[in-house]
Each structure stands twice: as C-alpha cells, then as structure tokens.
Length: 225
Length: 91
Image (cartoon, rainbow over all chains, first blue to last red; front, side, top):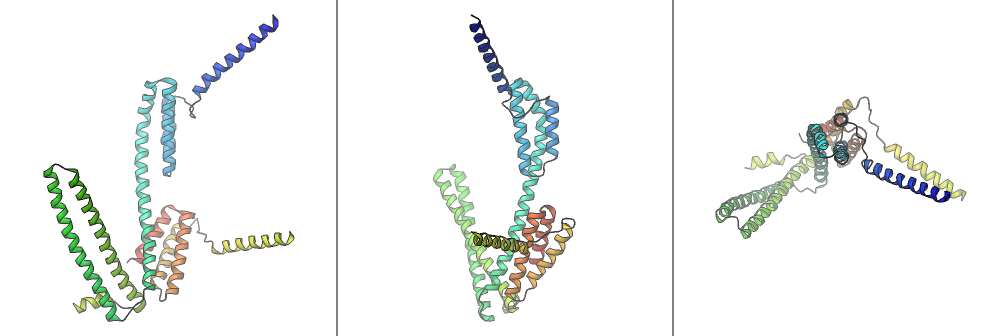
C-alpha cells in the first residue's frame, strides 16, 4: 500500500516536471530575453548605433525580428505591434546606413577595378609588338574607321528599336513583338560592347607607342588629317 | 625518422623566412599619410618606367601595397590609396 503511494508520488512529480518543462520550453523557444518593449527597443537602438559593417546591420535586423516573434508568442499580437512601432524607426535608420555602406562598397569596388584594369592595360601595352611609325598609324586609323562604322550601325539599330517600340505600344504589347524588341536590345548591347572593345584597342595602340617608342600617334594622326 | 624531422624543420623555417620577406607592414599610427605618400610614389614609378622590367617591378610592388592596405588598414586609407593611384595613372 505504502509502495503504491510512493509510486503515485513519483509519477505525479514526473508529470509536474514534464508540464513545467513544456511551459518553460515554449517560453525559452526564442534566444532573446524579454524585459519591456521600451527597454528592448532601447537595447536595439544601442546596438544599431555601434554597427560598422553590413553583417552587423543584419544581426540587428535579425534580433529585432526575434524580439517581435518572442513578444507575439509570449504576450500576443497587441504587445508585438507596440514593440514593432518602437523599433521600426530604428530599423529605418539601419536601412539608411546599409544603403550608405553599399554605396561605399560599390565605390571601393569601382576604384579597385579601375586600378587593376589600368595596370593590365599598361602591361598589355608594354608587351604589344610594334611596327614602324607608318604601320602603327595605319593600324590606329583602320581601327578608328572600324569603330566609326560600327557606331553608325549602332545608331541605326537604336533608331529602329525606338520606332519599333512605338509600334508595340500601338499594337497593345503583343508577345511576339515584345520578343522581337528583346532580341533587338540584345543585338544593340552586343554591338555596343564591340565598339567599346575596338575603342579600347585603339587606346592600347596609342599607349604602346607612347611607352615603347615615345611616339604620339594622336598628334601624328591629327597632322595627317 | 630523425632525418625526416630535421628536413621538416628546415622546410618550416624556410617557409617562415619566405613569408616574412614578402610581408609589408603598414604603420598603423600613420596610415593616412602613408596612403598618400606611398600611392604617389608607387604610381609615379609605374607611370615613369622606361622598360618593361621596371614597370613590372613597380606594378608588383604597388599591387603588394594595395593588398597590404586592404587587409591591414582598410577604410578611408585604403580608399585614398586607390584614388591617388588611379588619379596619377590615368591623368
């Protein structure tokens, strides 16, 4: 009889511990520890002030989202909405800072690319085999003529595309016409890239002659004209 | 076994030596000035080279300093280093 009572007591204790554990488990599901919406928003604001990288900014955003979920789970939607109203201005500020970081990163990347491309161009110019002055001038002029012809072609293509765009509007944007203008745009982009490549080649020819032979092909070209 | 250990040590020492030799240390107290001065000096050397060998040596050094500024300092000084080099090389 006594043994039976002890068994029941043990079972009741286990059951109680299980229920308490389950309750605590749901409360501790989130990694964040809630205080009050004001204090938690303040905590986020402090963190947002100290961020220096985009990764830090993402951490603040993730933490804000975890707080909001924790408020919703623990206290319901009204408190979560109240908390959201407190932290949203902070996140707006974080968003502005992220945009500034991205702009800075883009600028830095542009500067890096420019430096590496410039050194690569110089290397190419130093290694370019050169002929006589007359040959080099002829090479530059042929290259410039090819670029000019291609620019004229490109201009015709652009005008044709613009006219076709007007036709598409009048026809009510049918799919086959949209496909055709897509192809025209791709052709224009390819031609533009070709023109840029020819122009770049001209720059390398001029640079190579300047570096290796101290020749100024631009001046020679102008004097011939 | 002894021979292998000695050989291993020798290789490790050589590797350390080689690494130290190519290591560039940017002065952390004066990195802004270094960014201005080094970029101007290195870019001018690249630009004024009179042979391909001179150009390559200067360009390699410039690229090594660029990497050092990027990895050791970053931020404003690295940006200044890049901007100054680009301004001189493309003027």
